[in-house]
Image (cartoon, rainbow, N blue to C red; front, side):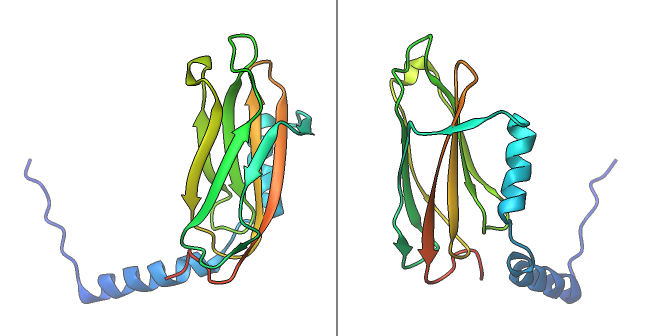
Length: 150
């Protein structure tokens, strides 16, 4: 069986270009989308505030590269450690920004990333501990120039 050759036309290239330009502006996540993602991950388990420290600028000049540092207060022992850390944004095209898994061998539960933000929004972090408990923290960031549009 010979591989099929794919033929691109000007029309298909134009349609792909328009889709790339318009798709980011068509729909953004909102608080309901973040709630749905959290419900899918954790059902209705209670989430407590605390243990998570967010370092996020209140104003981001450019949404193309917004720094975020997250650390979770945990001894990272076999009995008490962070299992997962999820970062959500309620104004991006997709609500889940990043997910991380930790083990006691990590020594500490901390991440530092740069993320793209389409607009001003709230960043929500959820840490799942080894005993199944959940902790959450949130912070608002104002974006002057969106980073998810072309």
